[in-house]
Image (tube, rainbow, N blue to C red; front, side, top):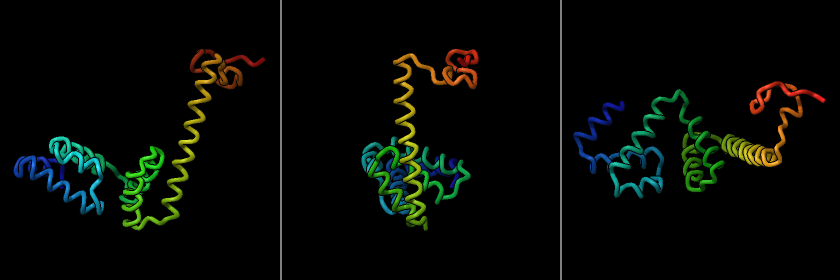
Length: 152
């Protein structure tokens, strides 16, 4: 179904019935309904726009369903969203993604989170101490100071 088809169906069925239809479609696709969608059921306009937004992203993607779920597993792990992680592991498994592939996505996410923590914290420490590692290395132009740093 296209975006225009979705919009026409919403107009035809009305907001409340469309929201209920979308909840059923999510349940069919994922095997469960994410908590946030349960919460949004009392606000069908929010639910509908959220699901339309999700669908637009998926439709515009050239990624296959398994890759999308592996990305979703990795991001859920990195964000430490246990509810999201549980859902996306379940969906990935149902699509035939192996436990080894899921573990690899989780380990990659953990590695990137670790690198992000270290990179952010060390940059802030250097800024606090007014240290520029690029200038100290002198191997390229410093983005902050503009000129190529001089080696001692």
